[in-house]
Amino acid sequence: MALVQQVKVPLISVNDTSLTVVDILFANGDKINKGDIIFVFETSKTTYNVEAEENGYIQNLCEEGNDYEVNDIVANIYSEQSEVEKVTSDKKIKKSGPKKDAVTSVAVGIWEGETFFSVQAAALLESSGVDKNKFKGKDFVSKEDVEEILGIKKASGAPLKGNKNNSDKKLLPVDTTKVIIEKLSSNKKREIEYLAEVQTAGLTSTINTIAETDGVFVHINRSLKFLKDSLLPVIIYESSRLLKKYKELNAYYTGESIAYYNDVHVGFAVDMEKGLKVLKIANTEQKTIGAIEEEIMTLSGKYLDDTLQIDELIDISFTITDLSSESVAFFRPLINMMNSAILGVSSIDEKLNRCTLSVTFDHRVTAGKLVAQFLKELKERIESYRSVHHPYVNQDISCFKCYKTLKEDLSDVGFAKCITPKGEEGYICQSCSKGF
Image 1: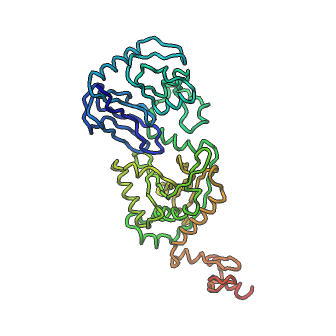
Image 2: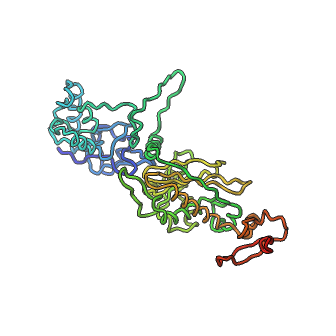
Image 3: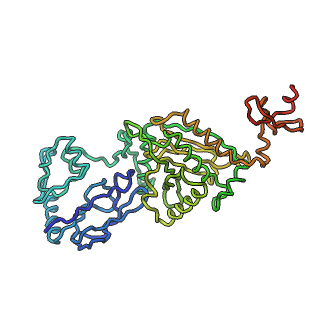
């Protein structure tokens, strides 16, 4: 008889330090074959099937609906069914056995094999100085087991990871005669966790700018097949190139230092009745506007079909959230975990021919001046697509001396093209030309 495999929680994404067991496909003692799907885990972005690597009999160490840390052991596979029955019997003995004093001892069964510790349990043991021998006779030790003998009770309203300020908060009272309680989904819990990671530090600000959009689609639409009259492809395109210059916006705060991403992987947020997800366009700055549009369409299709791959959801270095189709004047986007900034795109004001661009940034990584410079350059790049033949664009021509615009000129004569004292091409109004 032998333990042929320990099934551990996999590290699927750097953002997912714990996964939720959403489906257990075999009961204790069931025979399984190599390649069988034995568990389904839910991550913050997708689901993940765990396959057996060996033939044998399974002993489950987890429950559906519970969260488990990466590298926690959630099942053992034994070569003989009798070994599973023996371990299960031992666990029943432990549950009915006497309780011992915390820290000095724990109630254990008669497990004679090696005791396995989760990564978190081993780290807690090392930091607290508790002797591992106190768990002799126990097959698997979790972080919760160590916390129990240390007298640490895990409260039902335990704070989210990265949310230190939440530890002092009390849960709000609930009167079930007045409200209906609905459990948070795993996706929503992780969304709260990731957004809280940066925002709870209280060191974020948002800067806005306005981009003129009249005449901008005359040229942009020539490069697009599907997203006509959408700024998203060109904003992703131009932002990705600026991020090579503004590296602080392509980074994140580690807790004691700043980590700068080597590559630019822009993510765009989508939420179409399947939960909020951020989809990655890898090596964005190397792609054309047309290629970016194709990736937006492909990834959005996979999102709707639930066929997204893990690599399409992780290692995002900068996020863009586009609410231009929602009639939003402006908003304050929230920074995702392991990012230092996020760009929000508001709706185009059809009367004023402009839209608001908003960047929320982490003061621990960058400063308002740099973000303002980034937005200024992004605005100029977007406005550079405006057609010089568009009537609104022509009206924005201004005199290099008095700055009066062609739209404001009442002489009905027009401006003359000239070379400015700086040697640049420009325009001069009739009044300034005549010395008035």
